[in-house]
Length: 210
Length: 277
Ligand SMILES: [Zn+2]
Image (cartoon, rainbow over all chains, first blue to last red; front, side, top):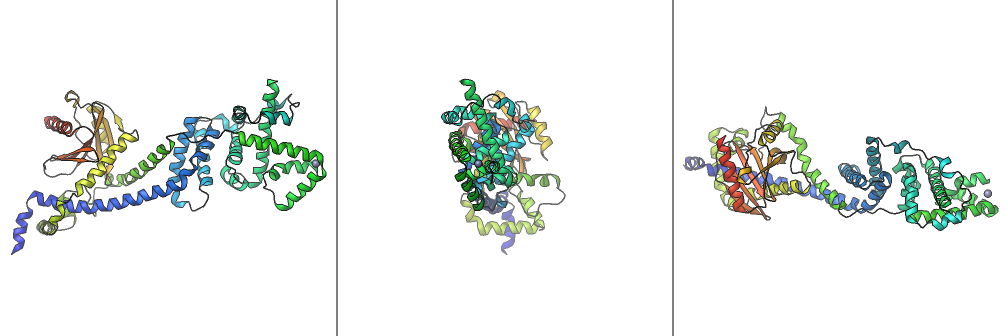
C-alpha cells in the first residue's frame, strides 16, 4: 500500500513547506490578477484626468494665490477624483475635476480660516477719483500681464474663479454654474461684476501712475 | 429694449450665451443706439484683451509624478482597510489560508484531521512536486516586498515612528500590532535603527523595521507564523537584495540595495542580538 509511505514522506518538514508553497503560489497569482485590475483602473483614470492637470493647477493657483497650497490641493483633488471615479460617467472630465479642485480649495481656505471668503470688494476705495481714465487708456495697459495679475489677485475669490473659468478655460455659463455651484442665471451678472471690478482696479492703478 | 436692459445683458451677448431672440433684440438696440454700441465695442475689446492677458499657471514639473505616486499609494493602501477586521476578530479562523499561514494552520483550517491532512499534503506534493522547481511563491513575494521597500523610500514614508531608540520603536509597534516584533539595537554594528512602520502584505499587517547602512536603507519585514526554523534564503531580484530567515516565532524578510554580504552581516547581527533577549 502506497499511502503509508507517503505519510512517512510527508513528515519531512520540507514537504509540508512545499505544499504550502503551492497554496502560496495560487494565492499570489490571485493577488497578481487583483494588482493588474487595480493598475488598469489607475491607468484608465490617468488617461482621462491627467490631461486636465494644467487647468486644475491654474484654477487652484488663482483661488489660493500660493504655489505650495495649489499643488497640495491638486494632488488631493486627484485623489478624491480617483476615489469616486467609478461614479463618474460624464463626458466632461475637465469640468468634473475643476469642481473637485474648487471644493478642495474652499475646504483648505475654510480650514485656514481665511478671511478671503468673506472679503468684499470695496468699490469706493478702488474707484473713487479715477473716472477720468478712458477705456482706451486701460486697453493700452491690458497686455501688461504683470499688471493683470496684480489686478486679479486683488479681486475677491469668487471673481478670480469666474474669470479663470471663463477666460482661461473658455467654459460655458452652464459649466461655470455647475463648477461654482451657483444658479445659471447668476453667472452672467457675476461675470459682469468681475470684469467691471477688474477694469476699475486697472483704471485706479493707471490713474495713480499717471 | 431700453439702454439699461441692454447694458445688463451685454456680457451675455458678448459671450454668445443669450438665447437667439434676446440676442436679436440686443442687436437691434445696438443698431439704433450709438451710445450703447460704442460702449459695447469698447467693452468687447477690453474684455478680450484682458481675458487673454491673464497669466496661465501651468502645472510645474514634478506635479504629475506626485499625483501618480499618490494614486499608487492609495491603491497599495487599500487592503489596509481590511486589516482592523483581521486584528480584532481572532475568534474563528480565516476561511481560507493566507500567505502567512503555516502549513499546519492551513491544513487544520481546512477542517481535516491531522492524519488526513498529512496524507493530503503528501498527495499534493507527489503530484505537483515538479512545479516547485520553478521560481514560485518566493519570487512573487519578493516582488511585493521590493514594491513595499521602494514605496517606503519614494513617497517619503519611511517610518511611522522615527527613532533610533529600540525602546521607543518597540512599544509603538506593540501597541499597533497583534504581535510583538523583536526590535534590536545594531548601531554599534554599523546598522543604526531609523524607526518602525506598519506595512501591509497580503492583507496582513506586518512590522517594518528600518535600519541604515551608510546611505542605504534596509527594510526588515516581520510577522509571526513560522513553526520551525528554516534555512535562510537569499535572493537577488530587480537589483535588490532580499534575505529571508525565520525563528520559532517570526518570519523575517530583509530588503535593501546594500550588497548581499552586508545583508548577510546584518542578519547575523540581528539574530545574535535577538538571542541575547
Ligand atoms: Zn442704448
